[in-house]
Picture (cartoon, one colour):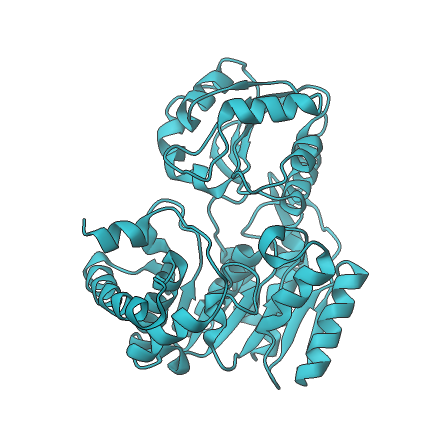
Length: 413
């Protein structure tokens, strides 16, 4: 692997949020982003799920759908998809090589190397534009206003999922400050779609949409219509549909996707098919009988996970396998997952310098009165959890998913 390929595929690091480097990089490529009709999806939680619902709806309508999301779960190719098929290696490798040459020129001009996320964003725009996608689902990496994806001049719609405290060191200390940053994806005259959330957040979104002359739609989650296993039913018109994604929080994500689909002019048949056909790994995903994986990694996401577990497995004893990044305020999440009959196993993401060490997590949790055991990696953690004979949920970081298949081999329930 070349030095640049190793750089592009290493764990994401965060540097100055700005559009200078990505703009220069894309200019050298002929500004492919200007050939993409994008649905820009920002927010704190639910971005990937909303993209999954929209992808299924748009594909059901017969459109060629590009999608750019992050991080990947197992292979980096997953970040860039056309009709749910990841970019093949024979297209990705030369694309990254050419992007690498352009990055060297950007560094020469600006004195800074583009970040990994900027590399992938440039590659995504070029590939999806060349593929002639009818529409591109573009997921914000961090924030909004100065996120690399916000180099686009307009969009088919700006979608804002639930906004909460996250990446506070970069985006702001209050939900209002974070909301203002995330509202940077709202474009003049283009529709904005969001959900009912904190009043102060909704106020910021309404203010920013008005400033841009953007028609604003605020969707409300439908009432629950029962569930099967971990999948909720939703009433759409006179049809009772089973959500393709698990968890009660997906009702809100489905409602947001429906409102966006309507803003894009999709028909009811495509919307209904998409609700049922949507797939999104690592979000309340059953890996094996009694073993779930959920990518919840901040208080809002963990709150949704905790509510789902209580709805589908009320009062049951369980084991929580948890890892997180060092930049996370982890105690609020651990407190939500704690309770009678809960046992914790703390682990870490192998090879990720941002990952908090298992022993550190144990000590931090103990300071809040939460006791747990340490395991050096996910495989060891799952093996330890298996000996307890209880259902288990893996959560805290999406990066854990990369070794989930290997870990499942140790699970016996």
